[in-house]
Length: 287
Image (cartoon, rainbow, N blue to C red; front, top):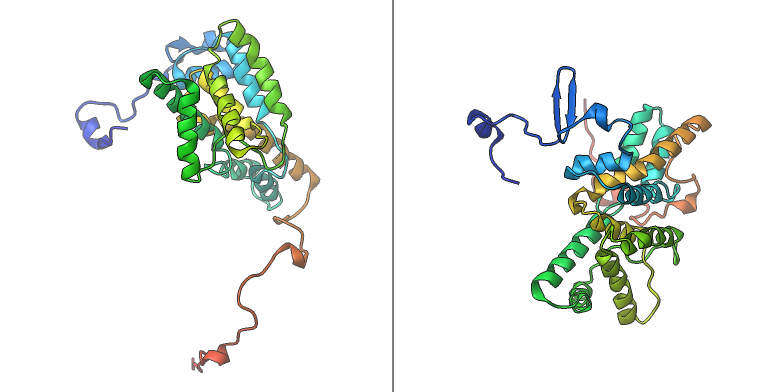
């Protein structure tokens, strides 16, 4: 990011908006240099998304693998905060698109950000391997030591519900033939798996890969930017958010809060039974 003044740049002859993505003129729509009429019907959703982000069209096999990642992250039920929020919003009388937006807006660093963090870590690991000449295992061991010393969570590892996530197995299975055929290198899948294995060795207990970890590895294999990962996940989870908001809307419930009205559901931890008179805080005021 240049941090240049937009107004100064404009006065120096640059466009107010500059984009390499789309060229829109009367009766003409071009995307990354391709005529939209040619793209329609000839590229898939995942190919279009990658084209918009990177300027390149994925091969059909790579695009299918990318689409599998989008499908895998589409929904994880109302236990996911984004899904729960969209359903709750749908009961409050706001517009349907606002209910969907409520769910999307909950996707951030804590809920939905692990893929971006994983991609950044995997890209950084590969760069270190290439620049230092160390093996993947050596670089990962050093990185793990530093992360554990700082008590940082390892992105893409572990899950609060699943200890053998079926989505992870399926994505690895779909990626394997592409590695064998040379469509993708497989290096980032190896890096992700080595982080899991090394951490399991250090912890001396089984450690599972989660959907964010394998999604991060695959997106690195496809050359997608880590900084775009949360946006990509929003497009993926947005499918589930839309479906759940619509389902809740059809059920017709009104003002459904975050939980039932049972007293034990909310634990009050504040001061109890205070009175203003106890502190001399009551004063008589005349209107």
